[in-house]
Length: 302
Image 1 (cartoon, rainbow, N blue to C red):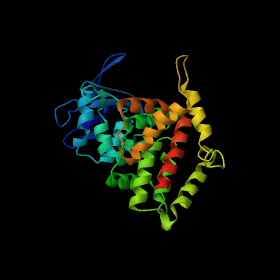
Image 2 (tube, rainbow, N blue to C red):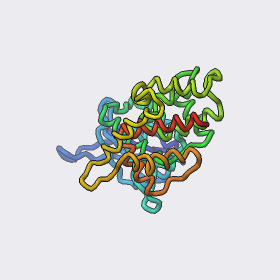
Image 3 (tube, rainbow, N blue to C red):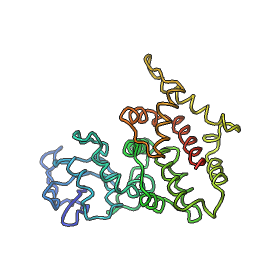
Image 4 (cartoon, one colour):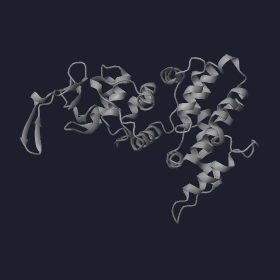
């Protein structure tokens, strides 16, 4: 069993067998360590470092709100949030936003690294990298960063944390994020290119075309520029018509969903309706491909 946060330094702590007492064949009594603020920690059962289940007798919203105050390294905090499978989309109904967004929006480099490029965890804990779990975690990221845009310092932190390539760190991050988190990636691209520029002073169009070619047909559906977005747009509109009363078409998807999202590159703040529509559309791969292509086109315009 693993408990977190514990003690003065809010570290994770393994609960050994001396602190676990059997009550009957199906029940155990566990002596829990205390958090520094007196709250009880969240506790998880693991096997060979893999999470099997967790529970807490404390207040989950309080823990999510207090993450920014923990004394640990922000990357470790984000990794433990992911490993413990905390309900990161749990909303504080006073604000109607996920409580974890307080931490996620201040430390996006730590959260994106923990979800996309995880580092080693203490006590030989291991993340679940199975397909089903990864799909859930990608949805978490989309919702956490829906309509959010990073500042210049955060963009530098994200690129430096996620990139493996020294020659083209931005391209490395785009390859990792674009098809799953197109809008966040678009903001990262725009700010990095304005601040640092393309690698080796390459012409912007040449650099963006090289990135497009990496994704192949997903971003270069046809050779003519005026047609290359049509297929994913039509597929996105078709996929949104999932019920008898659904009325989404390519004009609605473009004008009511994609255009407001693109406008955030210029500082537009999404309305609640625009956020709701975008959240639905972002679950569809054709829409994400269409939005990615539109974002790259907008960035190319400068």
